[in-house]
Length: 66
Image (tube, rainbow, N blue to C red):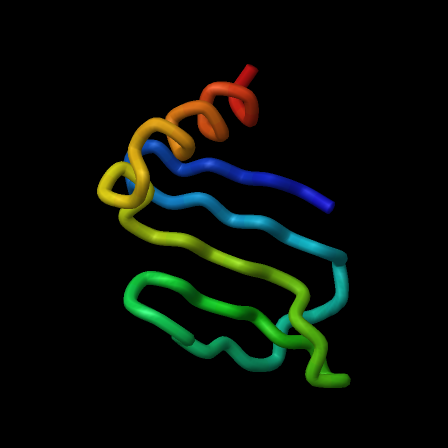
């Protein structure tokens, strides 16, 4: 599992495993799910981090980049 932050894109990406991504779906505004060939979620991207519950996201970003 990998947690990747993109400060310049204001995004957080959680990669659950290394299988190939075959499909992506936006399930909510700024929330994307990546699926593998078996239909399992292998990645979650959250956009507009700074606009979502700022205190908790700032803590996550600080821990992920430390």
